[in-house]
Amino acid sequence: MNYTTGKIKVRYNETDQMGIVHHSNYLKFFEFARIEWLEKLKMPYLEIERNKIILPVVNCELKFLKPLVFGDSFKVKVHCSKKPTSSIEFSYDIFNSRGEKTTEGRTLLAFLNSDTMKPLRCPKIISDLF
Amino acid sequence: MNYTTGKIKVRYNETDQMGIVHHSNYLKFFEFARIEWLEKLKMPYLEIERNKIILPVVNCELKFLKPLVFGDSFKVKVHCSKKPTSSIEFSYDIFNSRGEKTTEGRTLLAFLNSDTMKPLRCPKIISDLF
Amino acid sequence: MNYTTGKIKVRYNETDQMGIVHHSNYLKFFEFARIEWLEKLKMPYLEIERNKIILPVVNCELKFLKPLVFGDSFKVKVHCSKKPTSSIEFSYDIFNSRGEKTTEGRTLLAFLNSDTMKPLRCPKIISDLF
Amino acid sequence: MNYTTGKIKVRYNETDQMGIVHHSNYLKFFEFARIEWLEKLKMPYLEIERNKIILPVVNCELKFLKPLVFGDSFKVKVHCSKKPTSSIEFSYDIFNSRGEKTTEGRTLLAFLNSDTMKPLRCPKIISDLF
Image (tube, rainbow over all chains, first blue to last red; front, top):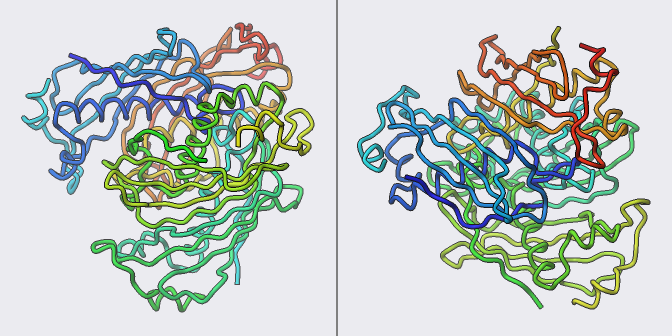
Protein backbone atom coordinates (compact mmCIF):
# COMPACT_ATOMS: atom_id res chain seq x y z
CA MET A 1 0.00 0.00 0.00
CA ASN A 2 1.45 3.30 -1.01
CA TYR A 3 0.79 6.79 -2.28
CA THR A 4 2.57 9.12 -4.70
CA THR A 5 2.20 12.89 -4.49
CA GLY A 6 1.60 15.11 -7.48
CA LYS A 7 4.50 16.98 -9.03
CA ILE A 8 6.13 19.41 -6.58
CA LYS A 9 8.42 22.19 -7.78
CA VAL A 10 11.65 22.97 -5.98
CA ARG A 11 11.32 26.42 -4.39
CA TYR A 12 14.18 28.87 -4.79
CA ASN A 13 14.49 29.34 -1.03
CA GLU A 14 15.14 25.61 -0.64
CA THR A 15 18.52 25.91 -2.36
CA ASP A 16 21.77 26.75 -0.58
CA GLN A 17 25.00 28.24 -1.88
CA MET A 18 26.18 24.84 -3.12
CA GLY A 19 23.40 25.29 -5.69
CA ILE A 20 21.39 22.27 -4.54
CA VAL A 21 18.36 21.73 -2.34
CA HIS A 22 19.52 21.89 1.28
CA HIS A 23 19.30 18.42 2.81
CA SER A 24 17.06 19.54 5.69
CA ASN A 25 14.21 20.21 3.25
CA TYR A 26 13.73 16.56 2.39
CA LEU A 27 12.27 15.89 5.83
CA LYS A 28 9.66 18.55 4.98
CA PHE A 29 8.93 16.84 1.65
CA PHE A 30 8.48 13.50 3.43
CA GLU A 31 6.14 15.12 5.96
CA PHE A 32 4.12 16.73 3.20
CA ALA A 33 3.73 13.36 1.47
CA ARG A 34 2.62 11.36 4.51
CA ILE A 35 0.14 14.07 5.53
CA GLU A 36 -1.32 14.22 2.03
CA TRP A 37 -1.61 10.45 2.06
CA LEU A 38 -3.47 10.41 5.40
CA GLU A 39 -5.80 13.04 3.95
CA LYS A 40 -6.57 10.85 0.92
CA LEU A 41 -7.29 8.01 3.34
CA LYS A 42 -9.88 10.32 4.97
CA MET A 43 -7.76 10.68 8.07
CA PRO A 44 -6.71 14.33 7.97
CA TYR A 45 -3.95 15.18 10.34
CA LEU A 46 -6.02 18.01 11.87
CA GLU A 47 -8.61 15.41 12.87
CA ILE A 48 -5.86 13.34 14.51
CA GLU A 49 -4.62 16.38 16.46
CA ARG A 50 -8.19 17.23 17.48
CA ASN A 51 -8.34 13.80 19.09
CA LYS A 52 -5.37 14.88 21.24
CA ILE A 53 -2.96 12.67 19.36
CA ILE A 54 0.34 13.99 18.05
CA LEU A 55 2.82 12.13 15.93
CA PRO A 56 6.36 13.43 16.48
CA VAL A 57 9.19 11.90 14.46
CA VAL A 58 11.39 9.85 16.78
CA ASN A 59 13.80 8.43 14.30
CA CYS A 60 14.70 9.03 10.69
CA GLU A 61 17.19 8.18 8.01
CA LEU A 62 17.91 9.73 4.63
CA LYS A 63 20.03 8.65 1.70
CA PHE A 64 20.83 11.15 -1.03
CA LEU A 65 21.49 9.54 -4.40
CA LYS A 66 21.35 12.66 -6.56
CA PRO A 67 20.73 16.28 -5.65
CA LEU A 68 17.53 18.08 -6.50
CA VAL A 69 18.23 21.52 -7.94
CA PHE A 70 16.21 24.64 -8.62
CA GLY A 71 14.27 24.10 -11.84
CA ASP A 72 13.54 20.46 -10.92
CA SER A 73 10.18 19.13 -9.95
CA PHE A 74 9.75 15.87 -8.07
CA LYS A 75 7.27 13.36 -6.70
CA VAL A 76 7.38 11.64 -3.33
CA LYS A 77 6.29 8.01 -3.09
CA VAL A 78 5.44 6.99 0.44
CA HIS A 79 4.48 3.66 1.92
CA CYS A 80 3.82 2.31 5.36
CA SER A 81 6.60 -0.15 5.91
CA LYS A 82 5.37 -1.98 9.04
CA LYS A 83 2.14 -2.69 10.89
CA PRO A 84 1.62 0.32 13.23
CA THR A 85 1.95 -0.38 16.96
CA SER A 86 2.81 2.45 19.36
CA SER A 87 4.65 3.95 16.43
CA ILE A 88 4.24 4.05 12.67
CA GLU A 89 6.97 3.77 10.08
CA PHE A 90 6.85 5.38 6.66
CA SER A 91 9.35 4.86 3.84
CA TYR A 92 9.87 7.33 1.03
CA ASP A 93 11.38 7.54 -2.43
CA ILE A 94 11.75 10.81 -4.28
CA PHE A 95 11.91 10.88 -8.07
CA ASN A 96 12.90 13.87 -10.20
CA SER A 97 11.10 14.84 -13.39
CA ARG A 98 13.32 12.51 -15.43
CA GLY A 99 12.04 9.63 -13.29
CA GLU A 100 15.41 9.18 -11.56
CA LYS A 101 15.35 8.26 -7.90
CA THR A 102 17.10 11.04 -6.01
CA THR A 103 16.41 10.25 -2.37
CA GLU A 104 15.37 7.44 -0.07
CA GLY A 105 14.19 7.83 3.47
CA ARG A 106 12.45 6.38 6.45
CA THR A 107 10.75 8.05 9.41
CA LEU A 108 9.43 6.48 12.59
CA LEU A 109 6.69 8.45 14.33
CA ALA A 110 5.35 7.84 17.83
CA PHE A 111 1.72 8.18 18.87
CA LEU A 112 1.57 10.51 21.86
CA ASN A 113 -1.25 12.03 23.88
CA SER A 114 -0.84 15.75 23.29
CA ASP A 115 -1.87 16.65 26.86
CA THR A 116 0.29 14.20 28.75
CA MET A 117 2.97 13.57 26.10
CA LYS A 118 2.65 9.87 27.02
CA PRO A 119 2.89 7.12 24.39
CA LEU A 120 -0.30 5.63 23.00
CA ARG A 121 -1.06 2.51 21.01
CA CYS A 122 -1.90 3.27 17.39
CA PRO A 123 -5.59 4.27 17.42
CA LYS A 124 -7.81 1.71 15.67
CA ILE A 125 -9.06 4.33 13.18
CA ILE A 126 -5.48 4.62 11.95
CA SER A 127 -4.35 0.99 12.13
CA ASP A 128 -7.47 0.06 10.16
CA LEU A 129 -6.22 2.20 7.28
CA PHE A 130 -3.09 0.14 6.72
CA MET B 1 15.42 52.46 24.78
CA ASN B 2 16.95 49.69 22.80
CA TYR B 3 18.81 46.38 22.90
CA THR B 4 21.58 44.85 20.82
CA THR B 5 22.02 41.09 20.54
CA GLY B 6 25.33 39.33 20.84
CA LYS B 7 27.20 38.28 17.71
CA ILE B 8 25.21 35.79 15.62
CA LYS B 9 26.86 33.69 12.91
CA VAL B 10 25.21 33.20 9.56
CA ARG B 11 24.24 29.52 9.25
CA TYR B 12 25.06 27.70 6.02
CA ASN B 13 21.43 26.66 5.54
CA GLU B 14 20.41 30.33 5.53
CA THR B 15 22.15 30.90 2.18
CA ASP B 16 20.53 30.36 -1.20
CA GLN B 17 22.06 29.69 -4.61
CA MET B 18 22.69 33.40 -5.15
CA GLY B 19 25.31 32.92 -2.42
CA ILE B 20 23.67 35.32 0.04
CA VAL B 21 21.40 34.92 3.05
CA HIS B 22 17.86 34.36 1.79
CA HIS B 23 15.77 37.43 2.56
CA SER B 24 13.12 35.46 4.47
CA ASN B 25 15.66 34.75 7.23
CA TYR B 26 15.87 38.36 8.35
CA LEU B 27 12.36 38.17 9.82
CA LYS B 28 13.66 35.29 11.94
CA PHE B 29 16.65 37.38 13.05
CA PHE B 30 14.32 40.24 14.01
CA GLU B 31 12.11 37.85 15.97
CA PHE B 32 15.11 36.40 17.77
CA ALA B 33 16.24 39.90 18.77
CA ARG B 34 12.91 41.13 20.12
CA ILE B 35 12.35 37.89 22.08
CA GLU B 36 15.84 38.09 23.59
CA TRP B 37 15.15 41.69 24.53
CA LEU B 38 11.86 40.85 26.26
CA GLU B 39 13.74 38.14 28.15
CA LYS B 40 16.37 40.65 29.36
CA LEU B 41 13.49 42.86 30.51
CA LYS B 42 12.29 39.90 32.60
CA MET B 43 9.29 39.38 30.37
CA PRO B 44 10.02 36.05 28.72
CA TYR B 45 7.83 35.27 25.77
CA LEU B 46 6.82 31.94 27.30
CA GLU B 47 5.39 33.83 30.25
CA ILE B 48 3.40 36.02 27.86
CA GLU B 49 2.00 32.97 26.07
CA ARG B 50 1.15 31.35 29.42
CA ASN B 51 -1.02 34.39 30.10
CA LYS B 52 -2.97 33.48 26.94
CA ILE B 53 -1.49 36.36 24.99
CA ILE B 54 0.01 35.89 21.56
CA LEU B 55 1.77 38.47 19.48
CA PRO B 56 1.45 37.73 15.76
CA VAL B 57 3.17 40.02 13.27
CA VAL B 58 0.52 42.00 11.39
CA ASN B 59 2.73 44.24 9.32
CA CYS B 60 6.39 44.41 8.43
CA GLU B 61 8.88 46.13 6.21
CA LEU B 62 12.47 45.31 5.33
CA LYS B 63 15.17 47.22 3.51
CA PHE B 64 18.30 45.41 2.38
CA LEU B 65 21.33 47.66 2.10
CA LYS B 66 23.99 44.96 1.77
CA PRO B 67 23.72 41.20 1.73
CA LEU B 68 24.88 39.03 4.61
CA VAL B 69 26.89 36.07 3.38
CA PHE B 70 28.11 32.82 4.85
CA GLY B 71 31.18 33.56 6.94
CA ASP B 72 29.64 36.80 8.26
CA SER B 73 28.45 37.34 11.77
CA PHE B 74 26.05 40.10 12.68
CA LYS B 75 24.28 41.88 15.53
CA VAL B 76 20.67 43.01 15.62
CA LYS B 77 19.80 46.30 17.31
CA VAL B 78 16.15 46.53 18.21
CA HIS B 79 14.13 49.35 19.68
CA CYS B 80 10.49 49.98 20.45
CA SER B 81 9.52 52.75 18.12
CA LYS B 82 6.13 53.78 19.56
CA LYS B 83 4.20 53.60 22.81
CA PRO B 84 2.42 50.18 22.75
CA THR B 85 -1.39 50.28 22.43
CA SER B 86 -3.27 47.30 21.05
CA SER B 87 -0.13 46.64 19.07
CA ILE B 88 3.59 47.10 19.54
CA GLU B 89 6.10 48.28 16.97
CA PHE B 90 9.74 47.30 16.89
CA SER B 91 12.42 48.70 14.61
CA TYR B 92 15.63 46.89 13.77
CA ASP B 93 19.06 47.51 12.34
CA ILE B 94 21.45 44.72 11.47
CA PHE B 95 25.19 45.34 11.42
CA ASN B 96 27.79 42.96 10.01
CA SER B 97 31.13 42.25 11.71
CA ARG B 98 32.74 45.23 9.97
CA GLY B 99 30.12 47.45 11.65
CA GLU B 100 28.32 48.17 8.37
CA LYS B 101 24.56 48.43 8.48
CA THR B 102 23.18 45.72 6.22
CA THR B 103 19.47 45.74 6.93
CA GLU B 104 16.71 47.90 8.37
CA GLY B 105 13.28 46.72 9.36
CA ARG B 106 10.12 47.31 11.23
CA THR B 107 7.49 44.89 12.54
CA LEU B 108 4.10 45.65 14.02
CA LEU B 109 2.72 42.97 16.33
CA ALA B 110 -0.83 42.75 17.67
CA PHE B 111 -1.79 41.60 21.16
CA LEU B 112 -4.34 38.81 20.83
CA ASN B 113 -6.05 36.54 23.30
CA SER B 114 -4.85 33.08 22.26
CA ASP B 115 -8.19 31.41 23.03
CA THR B 116 -10.50 33.84 21.27
CA MET B 117 -7.99 35.36 18.81
CA LYS B 118 -9.53 38.74 19.73
CA PRO B 119 -7.42 41.91 20.03
CA LEU B 120 -6.29 43.03 23.47
CA ARG B 121 -4.89 46.26 24.81
CA CYS B 122 -1.18 46.00 25.61
CA PRO B 123 -1.03 44.40 29.07
CA LYS B 124 0.25 46.78 31.74
CA ILE B 125 3.16 44.46 32.58
CA ILE B 126 4.41 45.01 29.04
CA SER B 127 3.61 48.69 28.55
CA ASP B 128 5.40 49.38 31.84
CA LEU B 129 8.60 48.02 30.33
CA PHE B 130 8.79 50.66 27.63
CA MET C 1 -1.05 42.16 -16.20
CA ASN C 2 -0.96 39.54 -13.52
CA TYR C 3 -0.71 35.85 -12.71
CA THR C 4 -2.36 33.60 -10.14
CA THR C 5 -0.69 30.40 -8.95
CA GLY C 6 -2.50 27.12 -8.60
CA LYS C 7 -3.70 25.99 -5.18
CA ILE C 8 -0.83 25.56 -2.71
CA LYS C 9 -1.26 23.60 0.52
CA VAL C 10 0.15 24.89 3.77
CA ARG C 11 2.93 22.53 4.87
CA TYR C 12 3.01 21.38 8.48
CA ASN C 13 6.58 22.63 8.95
CA GLU C 14 5.44 26.14 8.02
CA THR C 15 3.43 26.44 11.25
CA ASP C 16 4.83 27.69 14.54
CA GLN C 17 3.68 27.12 18.10
CA MET C 18 1.09 29.89 17.80
CA GLY C 19 -0.64 27.43 15.46
CA ILE C 20 -0.40 29.68 12.40
CA VAL C 21 1.93 29.89 9.40
CA HIS C 22 5.11 31.67 10.52
CA HIS C 23 5.25 35.09 8.89
CA SER C 24 8.67 34.50 7.31
CA ASN C 25 7.14 31.90 4.98
CA TYR C 26 5.07 34.43 3.06
CA LEU C 27 8.22 35.83 1.45
CA LYS C 28 8.84 32.30 0.15
CA PHE C 29 5.29 32.10 -1.21
CA PHE C 30 5.75 35.44 -2.98
CA GLU C 31 9.04 34.25 -4.47
CA PHE C 32 7.44 31.03 -5.65
CA ALA C 33 4.67 33.00 -7.37
CA ARG C 34 6.89 35.49 -9.20
CA ILE C 35 9.23 32.71 -10.37
CA GLU C 36 6.33 30.62 -11.64
CA TRP C 37 5.01 33.67 -13.44
CA LEU C 38 8.35 34.36 -15.16
CA GLU C 39 8.38 30.73 -16.21
CA LYS C 40 4.92 31.04 -17.79
CA LEU C 41 6.20 34.11 -19.63
CA LYS C 42 8.96 31.89 -21.06
CA MET C 43 11.59 33.63 -18.98
CA PRO C 44 12.67 30.93 -16.55
CA TYR C 45 14.71 32.18 -13.66
CA LEU C 46 17.49 29.67 -14.41
CA GLU C 47 17.87 31.29 -17.83
CA ILE C 48 18.16 34.70 -16.17
CA GLU C 49 20.86 33.42 -13.81
CA ARG C 50 22.68 31.79 -16.74
CA ASN C 51 22.91 35.27 -18.26
CA LYS C 52 24.80 36.34 -15.11
CA ILE C 53 21.86 38.31 -13.81
CA ILE C 54 20.61 37.93 -10.26
CA LEU C 55 17.59 39.53 -8.73
CA PRO C 56 18.01 39.99 -4.98
CA VAL C 57 15.14 41.49 -3.00
CA VAL C 58 16.15 44.97 -1.82
CA ASN C 59 12.94 46.06 -0.20
CA CYS C 60 9.72 44.42 0.88
CA GLU C 61 6.54 44.98 2.81
CA LEU C 62 3.92 42.58 4.11
CA LYS C 63 0.50 43.08 5.62
CA PHE C 64 -1.22 40.19 7.36
CA LEU C 65 -5.01 40.41 7.31
CA LYS C 66 -5.80 36.88 8.46
CA PRO C 67 -3.51 34.00 9.37
CA LEU C 68 -3.11 30.95 7.17
CA VAL C 69 -3.26 27.76 9.20
CA PHE C 70 -2.40 24.12 8.63
CA GLY C 71 -5.23 22.56 6.64
CA ASP C 72 -5.61 25.69 4.49
CA SER C 73 -4.66 25.94 0.88
CA PHE C 74 -4.09 29.25 -0.82
CA LYS C 75 -3.37 30.99 -4.12
CA VAL C 76 -0.95 33.83 -4.73
CA LYS C 77 -1.91 36.56 -7.20
CA VAL C 78 1.09 38.52 -8.40
CA HIS C 79 1.36 41.55 -10.62
CA CYS C 80 4.13 43.83 -11.78
CA SER C 81 3.27 47.16 -10.25
CA LYS C 82 5.65 49.48 -12.12
CA LYS C 83 7.59 49.61 -15.35
CA PRO C 84 10.93 47.83 -14.63
CA THR C 85 14.04 50.07 -14.61
CA SER C 86 17.13 49.02 -12.68
CA SER C 87 14.72 47.25 -10.39
CA ILE C 88 11.40 45.48 -10.70
CA GLU C 89 8.47 45.68 -8.31
CA PHE C 90 5.95 42.93 -7.75
CA SER C 91 2.79 43.15 -5.68
CA TYR C 92 1.02 40.14 -4.21
CA ASP C 93 -2.29 39.12 -2.72
CA ILE C 94 -2.83 35.77 -1.07
CA PHE C 95 -6.31 34.24 -0.90
CA ASN C 96 -7.29 31.24 1.22
CA SER C 97 -9.56 28.46 -0.03
CA ARG C 98 -12.66 30.41 1.08
CA GLY C 99 -11.56 33.21 -1.26
CA GLU C 100 -10.68 35.55 1.61
CA LYS C 101 -7.67 37.77 1.17
CA THR C 102 -5.20 36.87 3.91
CA THR C 103 -2.05 38.74 2.95
CA GLU C 104 -0.83 41.64 0.86
CA GLY C 105 2.76 42.31 -0.06
CA ARG C 106 5.23 44.07 -2.25
CA THR C 107 8.83 43.25 -3.13
CA LEU C 108 11.36 45.35 -4.98
CA LEU C 109 14.14 43.39 -6.68
CA ALA C 110 17.31 44.81 -8.17
CA PHE C 111 18.98 43.60 -11.35
CA LEU C 112 22.62 42.82 -10.56
CA ASN C 113 25.46 41.33 -12.52
CA SER C 114 26.25 38.14 -10.63
CA ASP C 115 30.01 38.42 -11.23
CA THR C 116 30.50 42.04 -10.25
CA MET C 117 27.41 42.48 -8.04
CA LYS C 118 26.93 45.84 -9.84
CA PRO C 119 23.45 47.17 -10.73
CA LEU C 120 22.15 46.63 -14.25
CA ARG C 121 19.30 48.16 -16.20
CA CYS C 122 16.40 45.74 -16.65
CA PRO C 123 17.39 43.55 -19.61
CA LYS C 124 15.20 44.14 -22.66
CA ILE C 125 14.10 40.50 -22.73
CA ILE C 126 12.51 41.10 -19.34
CA SER C 127 11.15 44.62 -19.79
CA ASP C 128 9.51 43.43 -23.01
CA LEU C 129 7.47 40.96 -21.00
CA PHE C 130 5.67 43.59 -18.96
CA MET D 1 38.61 14.11 19.11
CA ASN D 2 35.54 16.23 19.37
CA TYR D 3 34.09 19.71 19.74
CA THR D 4 31.16 21.18 21.66
CA THR D 5 29.43 24.37 20.53
CA GLY D 6 28.52 27.18 22.86
CA LYS D 7 24.96 27.48 24.14
CA ILE D 8 22.45 27.97 21.31
CA LYS D 9 18.94 29.25 21.98
CA VAL D 10 15.94 27.69 20.28
CA ARG D 11 14.46 30.28 17.90
CA TYR D 12 10.70 30.79 17.92
CA ASN D 13 10.46 30.13 14.18
CA GLU D 14 11.97 26.66 14.74
CA THR D 15 8.85 25.48 16.57
CA ASP D 16 5.82 23.95 14.89
CA GLN D 17 2.21 23.71 16.01
CA MET D 18 2.99 20.62 18.10
CA GLY D 19 4.88 23.10 20.29
CA ILE D 20 8.28 21.49 19.76
CA VAL D 21 11.27 22.19 17.52
CA HIS D 22 10.47 20.83 14.06
CA HIS D 23 12.65 17.80 13.39
CA SER D 24 14.11 19.24 10.17
CA ASN D 25 15.95 21.90 12.17
CA TYR D 26 18.28 19.42 13.83
CA LEU D 27 20.11 18.87 10.55
CA LYS D 28 20.78 22.63 10.57
CA PHE D 29 22.09 22.44 14.14
CA PHE D 30 24.41 19.58 13.16
CA GLU D 31 25.67 21.54 10.16
CA PHE D 32 26.28 24.61 12.32
CA ALA D 33 28.32 22.51 14.77
CA ARG D 34 30.55 20.79 12.20
CA ILE D 35 31.23 24.07 10.40
CA GLU D 36 32.12 25.80 13.66
CA TRP D 37 34.43 22.92 14.50
CA LEU D 38 36.23 23.12 11.13
CA GLU D 39 36.64 26.83 11.77
CA LYS D 40 38.26 26.21 15.17
CA LEU D 41 40.59 23.75 13.43
CA LYS D 42 41.61 26.62 11.12
CA MET D 43 39.86 25.03 8.18
CA PRO D 44 37.00 27.43 7.50
CA TYR D 45 34.37 26.07 5.20
CA LEU D 46 34.67 29.10 2.91
CA GLU D 47 38.32 28.19 2.36
CA ILE D 48 37.28 24.64 1.45
CA GLU D 49 34.72 25.97 -1.06
CA ARG D 50 37.33 28.35 -2.50
CA ASN D 51 39.43 25.29 -3.27
CA LYS D 52 36.53 24.03 -5.39
CA ILE D 53 35.57 21.39 -2.89
CA ILE D 54 32.00 20.94 -1.69
CA LEU D 55 30.77 18.60 0.97
CA PRO D 56 27.15 17.60 0.38
CA VAL D 57 25.47 15.30 2.89
CA VAL D 58 24.92 11.90 1.27
CA ASN D 59 23.49 10.03 4.20
CA CYS D 60 22.14 10.88 7.62
CA GLU D 61 20.35 9.47 10.60
CA LEU D 62 18.66 11.13 13.55
CA LYS D 63 17.27 9.79 16.80
CA PHE D 64 15.05 12.02 18.91
CA LEU D 65 15.15 11.14 22.62
CA LYS D 66 13.42 14.25 23.96
CA PRO D 67 12.01 17.29 22.19
CA LEU D 68 13.66 20.68 22.35
CA VAL D 69 11.10 23.41 22.99
CA PHE D 70 11.04 27.19 22.78
CA GLY D 71 12.73 28.55 25.89
CA ASP D 72 15.40 25.80 25.79
CA SER D 73 18.99 26.34 24.93
CA PHE D 74 21.24 23.51 23.85
CA LYS D 75 24.78 22.51 22.93
CA VAL D 76 25.87 20.26 20.09
CA LYS D 77 28.77 17.88 20.64
CA VAL D 78 30.29 16.68 17.39
CA HIS D 79 33.00 14.17 16.66
CA CYS D 80 34.53 12.63 13.60
CA SER D 81 33.60 9.01 13.84
CA LYS D 82 35.84 7.47 11.15
CA LYS D 83 39.05 8.22 9.31
CA PRO D 84 38.02 10.39 6.30
CA THR D 85 38.38 8.76 2.85
CA SER D 86 36.30 10.00 -0.08
CA SER D 87 33.74 10.90 2.54
CA ILE D 88 33.74 12.10 6.13
CA GLU D 89 31.44 10.99 8.90
CA PHE D 90 30.42 13.15 11.84
CA SER D 91 28.41 12.04 14.87
CA TYR D 92 26.43 14.41 17.05
CA ASP D 93 24.81 14.57 20.47
CA ILE D 94 22.59 17.44 21.50
CA PHE D 95 22.17 18.31 25.18
CA ASN D 96 19.57 20.68 26.60
CA SER D 97 20.31 23.21 29.35
CA ARG D 98 19.58 20.59 32.02
CA GLY D 99 22.35 18.45 30.54
CA GLU D 100 19.93 15.86 29.20
CA LYS D 101 20.73 14.30 25.86
CA THR D 102 17.88 15.13 23.51
CA THR D 103 19.14 14.01 20.12
CA GLU D 104 21.70 11.77 18.47
CA GLY D 105 22.73 11.90 14.87
CA ARG D 106 25.18 10.97 12.20
CA THR D 107 25.90 12.54 8.81
CA LEU D 108 28.08 11.25 6.01
CA LEU D 109 29.42 13.92 3.66
CA ALA D 110 31.14 13.33 0.32
CA PHE D 111 34.06 15.33 -1.02
CA LEU D 112 33.14 16.58 -4.49
CA ASN D 113 34.83 18.86 -6.97
CA SER D 114 32.41 21.78 -7.27
CA ASP D 115 33.04 22.23 -11.01
CA THR D 116 32.70 18.64 -12.13
CA MET D 117 30.61 17.30 -9.22
CA LYS D 118 32.96 14.28 -9.27
CA PRO D 119 34.05 12.54 -6.04
CA LEU D 120 37.43 13.41 -4.55
CA ARG D 121 39.62 11.78 -1.95
CA CYS D 122 39.65 13.70 1.32
CA PRO D 123 42.20 16.50 0.80
CA LYS D 124 45.32 16.05 2.94
CA ILE D 125 44.77 19.41 4.65
CA ILE D 126 41.52 18.00 6.02
CA SER D 127 42.56 14.42 6.78
CA ASP D 128 45.55 15.82 8.68
CA LEU D 129 43.15 17.55 11.05
CA PHE D 130 41.62 14.32 12.31
